[in-house]
Image (cartoon, rainbow, N blue to C red):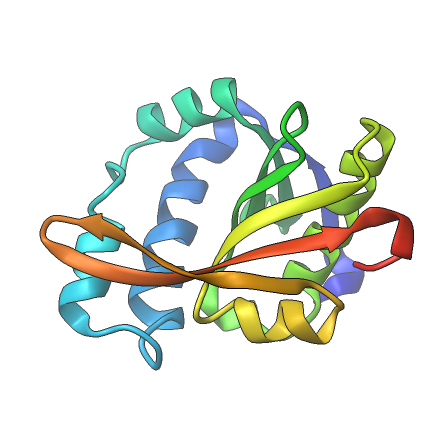
Length: 164
């Protein structure tokens, strides 16, 4: 899979695929960590439309993983604040290196932007793999969507330590 995947900045034509990646990563990929009600609330936080995701592209620097002409994963970064905003991968290609590569390239972009650390609020799905990659856990917190509390983990990575 990884050998057929190209990593590049998002284009408006990726927006529809981003909406689908977001929805399916939550509804399928997070099924072992969040209840159905939590996942439905989380997935409905953003419209499942290309227009909504094009608007997000204008707000966040977005790196996409493209395979066979389709976005199969993406990572939104705030290069000014030194933050990873989101990281989502299509469930059928999860655990094949796509998310790891998106994260590594995003970390490098944060380094190049002059940051000495990266921050993220990671889902319960992502947090364990970030710990394995050297991210420090700062604490748990909750976000609320449609009356559902969604646990997440605040994390930090010292960029001068060479972590990914």
